[in-house]
Length: 361
Image 1: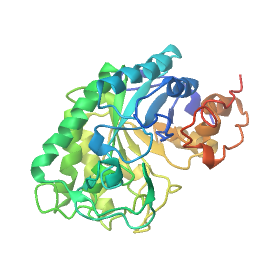
Image 2: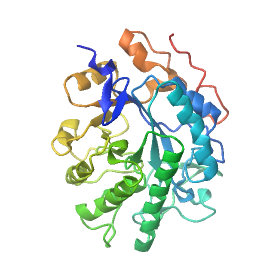
Image 3: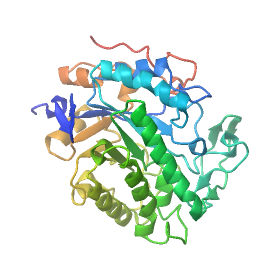
Image 4: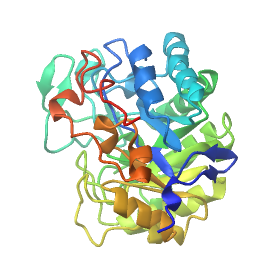
């Protein structure tokens, strides 16, 4: 191995320290007002040794909310507060993208003053309960967005991208994975629409492409990434035509000249088992830009994926919860910190299990 994973690289016009990205991970430290804070800025700056930081999922509108204490980017106060993070990361010579999020049906009326969450179709999540501001509850049947409402959702993504630019982010990632709104439109399991946003693979892809086009009016396309989860079962996803759907979506996204396509190719987050898993090689056939792999990678598999050309970047998540300097330690053959108890992953109280983990140097 030539340790290519740890060598400097470029992502379009960005110079990165290495081929590792900090995967977006919700950590629930923003408080009930969803305003980013100094503790979050410290957390991200501690991890600025990665090539690219992708922030935790950040809601584009109040309608998009569906997770307690997660941050937003839809008010002036939120926008201004995110500058704490971008300035702290840049002070440590880091690069940071904001992940844009709408939870869709993976929400609850408790987040919306009693109004139902929205989705592509009125199909509820089957399975686990959701943590709401009023406690743990069953998922509800969402309200299908009317056709004439969708332009407003697209506009929310564009405004959120504009706010991200104002806040100093180097780019944005459009979250179209893990069973959230754009993913709900993309898959036949959750999209039973009969208008121009449903009924065919092309129509189901329409909203994602329109959102990306809108965001690319704010940031150049080479500062915009998109995240997909073709094999995912999280939030009750998984469609029989997943191969055709994601192959088409990736081929259309290729026309934008994006910064990267972020593919959750690993199965550690759950697999729908509707056929053979899609691989990065499948996406190489239809997407000519940089590919980012994610989900379940460790040191050896990450090194191999970069070395053999399967991926251009590898996103690492959970190891960074306990160890703020994973890339630096892996490069030097050092052990990582012990895993943090999952009880502290989403603790809204503060630094414990968040910013109190030591770096090696």
